[in-house]
Length: 430
Ligand SMILES: *Cc1c(COP(=O)(O)O)cnc(C)c1O
Image (cartoon, rainbow, N blue to C red; front, side, top):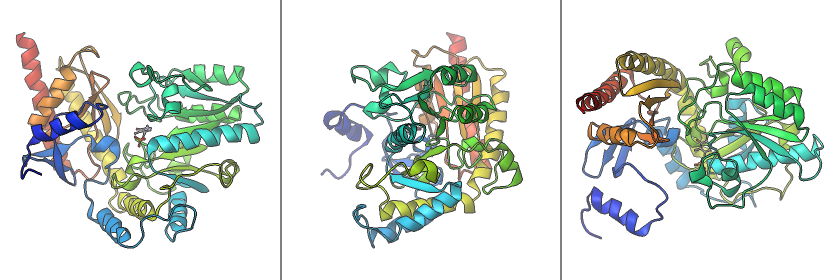
């Protein structure tokens, strides 16, 4: 290999030899630490995406890397044909942490969503006694649950769907944050097994529903004997200023009185991304015995799921969330971020909205989805030392690692507002 390649060379290599399945911001990263990333030319950036909220604990967290290294030297993979000495403690630890009875281990988010769909359907047939092959799962428009052929079957995004058919049946779509529609479907269809929902729609552009949406949805689901299946792959693990986004207003990590009142407990909880701090692909489905026990030996599986590396890394990553009080930090800094951004947009042409919870936020650019204003803003943010990416054309998501401190956040807010201001003056002068 050549001694030194520059960013353009690395990008060209991908373009020439890779599938063209992504359109990344043109930056080539080679190192990360905490809230920072460095590109191959040595330029330093604030990371405001955190690998889609996987890197909540910050890049290369020393404790997580230490757990990874120690386990890497000891035992990597046994498959589930045999037991390993990490899986049981991991299952006990995580089920205690999130207050569920059982855990099904897997690797990627989409894989865990697939498993949750299978469990929901099997519960529907065997416990709810839905007639053979008639089970339905309610989903929301604008959802994002991953990229497998079943999951894209119930996407409302034509880009994800077109020419990947024939699509899987058994899904009923309702608008997000629409309890009336949910109730109508539940009332008219006795074959519904579950309602699969994101407590905040991240990929759709950080759509935060009404405060009581999830709580009331859960109540309706219970009334009609339907499982509430919460996809917290992006929103979970401290990101939104509570351990889970379904926890609502409380930022405690345990089970305090306030949490008992506000916590909506999904019947099935899906986790991924930050469960490993982005250090290793780890995902999980959590639920209680009465649901998980529909899965018997041989009915589901994964070669890598529950491997000792995943277990060791994920336990340490969850410990870090607790020990460093990252949930509380996300809540506090999130409030600061939104209040600063709100006061900025009062006099802004270019930003029409700021929304989010904790450190999962977005701004809506005052331009059409087809415009490239948001993309151009992200390119200039990059020039100014901050990495973010548009979602859906005119929305920019801001999700830094939760290890950020207040002075770093203030510096970032000034990079963001100064960058936006440079676009305001441009717009004004044209
Ligand atoms: C990222 C994500 C997924 C898919 O996870 P992968 O690890 O990319 O398969 C599913 N649901 C939500 C809400 C996500 O944000």
